Image (cartoon, rainbow over all chains, first blue to last red):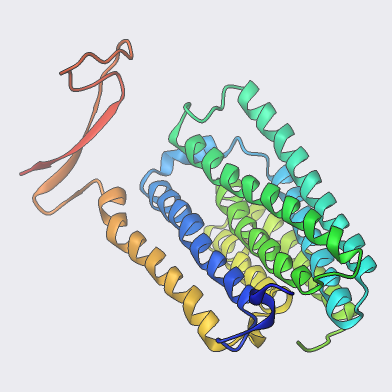
Length: 190
Length: 124
């Protein structure tokens, strides 16, 4: 028997997809709270620009490119699952998306290692507190997405539960959208 | 869900990359208005493209949009409610004071500060 979340709807869309949208609604409050707090502190303290100048815009840009590209592979996986009914292709594309997440995390790890070794730690200045908190919460969502996608890809490769490819994709695109805002806030605004 | 074809998604990705390049190089002009538009304005455009075309928000029932918008409104309320206190240093009949105490970061019970900054409002 298939889970009830996939087979019934009382809201016009599958209950599983509605659940994903609810998760994202709660994520808006989490990330929105952090970003709103950062924005008001940043605008109230123009001197933080001196600290922000130390972030590497090229690393941030590269990671933006990686996440945008991983979003492309995620939506192509969704397309393969829904319109081509090709679970194996969807699984391969999800694998590419996971690879994108892995590259993102490796680059972030290198970046953090460099910054921390130069004395820019979470305690050194309020800017860095926000920087590590916001980017850290985001990175934990990237890790969660990669794990979820691995499970979905495993089933999709066998042609099972293909609708989940779309669900995990929606989550991944949201993580991408959060980074789209983090990039200018943390890297470009000097 | 409508079948856009894979080329459509690749095209959206290409537009996103072009916008990314603009958002990187715009601020190099060091014109505040251009920085604001290229860095932050373009972020909203990029987010819109991803939400509409990759997350397919445009084909979801309207209430999904209302649900997410409600959360955004609460976020704006948080900002509007706290920002004046955080961003302003003074106002009518009050000024925010900051006390910086140099010394060892050891706090003893009953002491008011520990070498960190403490802020407070002083009424005039």
